[in-house]
Length: 231
View 1 (tube, helix red, strand yellow):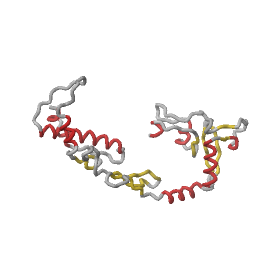
View 2 (cartoon, rainbow, N blue to C red):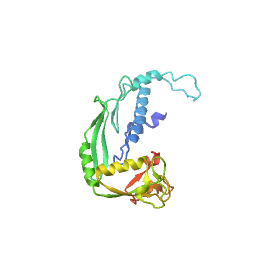
View 3 (tube, rainbow, N blue to C red):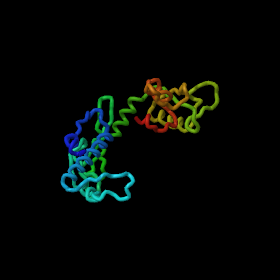
View 4 (cartoon, one colour):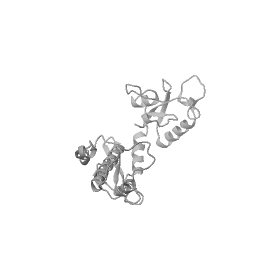
């Protein structure tokens, strides 16, 4: 009954807005779409009655093994291209472009494909990128925001909030980068002394907040990757 009443929606691929659709969402949609189409066709090709199931059943679906084999032979076109699997249940003939967002737009960095030996083919010239970034930052004075967190960032106790009074693991890295890339900097402790999290209004505080609001050029701390920061 379900498939009879939903056959149109099952057989009609979703038309996404490619500018806003994440790869993870596209793959999630394709997995559900593939399963629904496959199950629908499997039922059409086999004459059997579907009996009610219970979550407490001790026995698996009697047609489960046959359906599992059927999935490996079934093919359908999805958002991410043709969806099909090999005998091991791994998807084949799938590829993605690896891109990043730059000031000039979206740049293609490489190509991922299930059909090439190493899966990933990098096309971006990172040496050239390094030289460009190095020229952009040379002779610039950066404003660095941080907070005291041993052993990453420490302060020698001097009452003067001077850049020279900071030391620690992150400071050593900053010193080395400044020497290699030829830039100077000034360090200030973030006012609310927090790493940064988003409030109910979608506003950031702490180190992340100063970066988002462009009050600082660089955040320096033992920051961990949370779900909010990753987004």
